[in-house]
Length: 249
Ligand code: PGA
Image 1 (cartoon, rainbow, N blue to C red):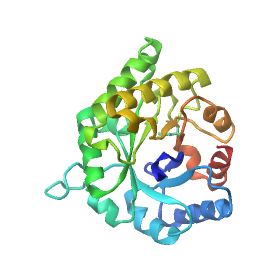
Image 2: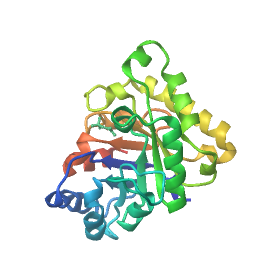
Image 3: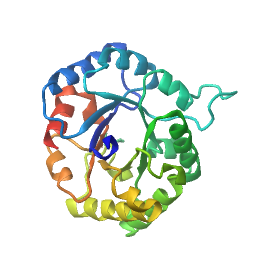
Image 4: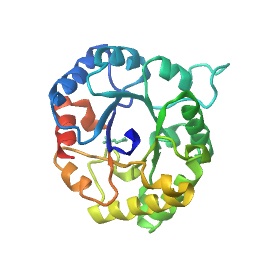
């Protein structure tokens, strides 16, 4: 079952012009011939989906988007549907990233509706959850993440290919990472939630860690319990750094 393989995905966020697709081709070249310990995906801005999927077709890199709207079509100026992302070459989509939750006010219910839309269109969702610093300091990390997992994952995910990404908000772009024990604690809790929600099917979806993953800390992050890959922001913009992270798995 392809969806049980670990996944290392790069989230380019709002970075990248057509000329930067060369960096993706460079990454594909660096990974050529390596033993496939994980799947590898790049999630560029939507403007690069077509060019990237055209240039990288058949070269071992999967292409994902960073968000979609829950509706398939209609009067939603500026938004993109899951069907449009598939049409542009995406096979995965990041949903519920903390930057979407913060800057666009996305709730768990919004994220669940988007996940359902992604599944309808045939996209594999990467659903993001994670506590902020105040919640971590108050000892509420597991409680917050469990609430987000339960609220953001619709029942229609049962038996479908998807990933959950644990991204503590305070670790994103900050250079700070949780300890291995802290990562293990939350990932184990997410696994328990998935099994409660989806029964046996909940044992398989990869749980990615995200938040300041770099070549220097990747091996340590990957040693934590129930870490089935990573969602990498800043370091995925450099083909050399991202390849080093992938090779650490
Ligand atoms: P970062 O971002 O690796 O730059 O911390 C991770 C993410 O937001 O997905």
